[in-house]
Every structure is written in structure tokens, then in C-alpha cells.
Image (cartoon, rainbow, N blue to C red; front, side, top):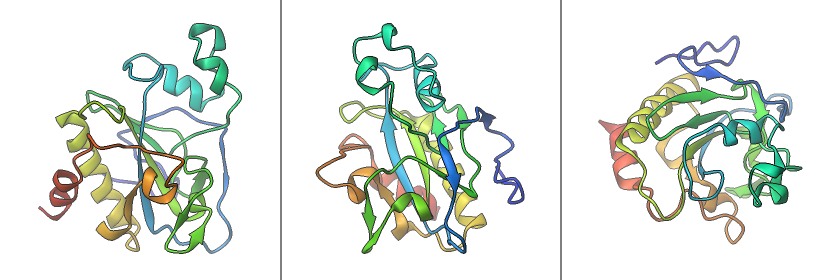
Length: 183
């Protein structure tokens, strides 16, 4: 896997442009990866609801839950689906709106200096082997492209927004993931 730093795109990812992004503050160094989990409707996998949500096209009549979130403006740089399919919504040099109110190492506004990777999943179900493999490959690619990112700056959404967020949750195997980055 590789990244084109001129465009901020990972060519092997399927690109679905999200409008929920903007320019990073000038001279910002990308040095954090935030791992998230999302499923829409909650606890259900498959379909295009996450894509629709990140592109502001979620039909609130498709599910009762959607009426509570359809007006939110959210995105991530990447989504890894259950079978390992990689989607990219925002170029890496742009700021995706994934972290919300957040803090890492006494720095607020984590979106400013991070890359957001969503895993199709939930707090209470294991993630797939294909997702771990794709996440490892993508993380290694991003770490090579952005040398300020290290294993110690790869964090959970729950780490940067404690009390507000729980993802990727207790079913995410951090030991497996972080040890795979060293292999």
C-alpha cells in the first residue's frame, strides 16, 4: 500500500468524497491516528449507510435511529469495512471531522493534527481478521508518510474523548494491532 502525498490519497482505497472536511491550521504536523468504530444502524453491518452519513445523504426515514443523527456533519479519512474493503473520504492533508471535542497530550482539537480511521464495528462485537490486516497495512503506510506518528500516538476515540466516546471498545484487540505494527 502507498500514499500519494501530493493528493493525500491512498490509490488502492475507493474514494467517496465527503464534504465534511476543511483545511488544517497552517503548519500543522500530522502526528496522531485515531481509531474509531461505527455501525449504522447501531450493531448492524453492511450496506452504504456509513457512506451516506459521511456524505450528508443519510435518509432519516430508513431507520428510526437515523433521524437522531442525520443533521450531524461527520467524516473520517478512512473506513475499513468488515471484509477489509478500504474507503477514503477525505485526503490526508485535509482535516476530517471525526474526533469532535477532544484532547491528546494537552492539545485540544485533535482533528487538527490527526488522521481518523473508522472500522465498521461496534463496542460489543469482535473485529474481523481482514480489518486488522487492512488496518495494519494502512497504519504502516501512514506512519511511513508521516514520521511524527508512532505507536504511542495511535489512540482510540475513547482516549481523546473520555466519557463522551467508547469506541472502538473492549472488543478491539489493541495488543494484536500494536504488535502487528512492529512485525
